[in-house]
Image 1 (cartoon, rainbow, N blue to C red):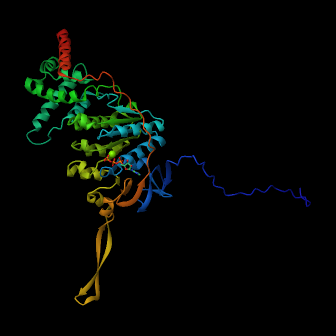
Image 2 (cartoon, rainbow, N blue to C red):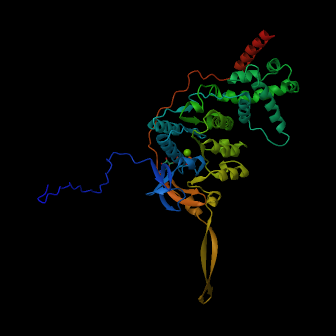
Image 3 (tube, protein in one colour):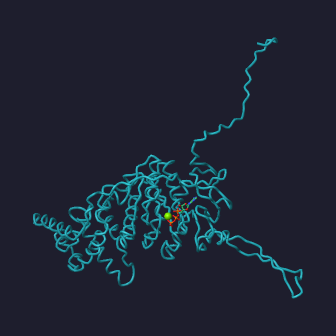
Length: 449
Ligand SMILES: Nc1ncnc2c1ncn2[C@@H]1O[C@H](COP(=O)(O)OP(=O)(O)OP(=O)(O)O)[C@@H](O)[C@H]1O
Ligand SMILES: [Mg+2]
């Protein structure tokens, strides 16, 4: 109480105090701007707001990722670092499963990825160290997956071979004992006697010769002979929240593209059928040319967004995407493009569009400037191609809806983790195995009759 009888109220002085984070606090991984919440991908260096930006941090939301992304650049330009940054931040800040399909077969990147996933509290599956189960689904789903292995002609007279293989695989998959659930069973079934026993009244089978069936079998034996038991495993996309798939083009040679297409087709089966539709997932394809021949690739990419599936495709150059029509369709169906240093940037920078620029000229005579001149309005690329050719590693142009921003991608931590050991007995699938399986199958057949 004061002398005047008034009750005094304590006076609180409100100090505007911004707590400074302790020195050891890690920088934030997410941010919010323009109504979008997302991961912090890069520091903005200039240009338009191609992506939302808060205090110089470029924000990439899951919604934008779901509308797909192209990450392109020459070798050494920083593509893999960009992909790892996205994989790590998404794994750390959301519950979205993150898958990485590595067409270069880079074990060092695999070790980086598994370390980053561990940091995010996830255990990664690693293919082929941990064999994959490529045999899930109904007969027709397995059949179309198997069709992807061989790059069959889709037009011209050579399509007869495609039709032949399709019929043989259908008979092998629509078997009274159910579809094949491993390589050996499939190969054993691709045999005239085995098929005749399974489909005694089939007119399609009656139209095939023993030699035609043998030819189909030779193609698949060649493939599964290279991939050995790596596709007869126990895990698939739906069993994990992180996976790294190494497609070793040196070890697998021409089988790499077939394997990439098989896994991608199985991934499409996973996102359309095996995962709940509302659940997000992210597939990163680093070095995309192995998949480029797949004629259905663009359609799958367009389909993916309706299933909450985000794809990030990372070719070295746009020519690495596929034929020109396919390239145009794919670049047209991705929303965001991250362009690192490339030597031929024109196809990419065209997507950012042009701006009007004035060009001045001064008229001269042999006696010097006349004092007259002219001005022309010219359309110029928004992004200067020479600047793209000179970008240092990790520096990029981000292009989105015709807007272009220059930025520096933030790097993910640089740890490594040991990869799981491959199984000790990785027995090659050879003809002897297949022959044994045929013998076993015909023993069953004999019992049945
Ligand atoms: N955001 C970044 N900030 C700083 N340095 C970077 C960044 N990104 C990449 N670098 C540097 O550039 C090197 C090459 O990057 P990276 O391996 O990602 O290239 P790449 O485009 O994947 O090449 P390749 O096509 O050969 O696989 C890295 O080892 C790193 O030293
Ligand atoms: Mg790389």
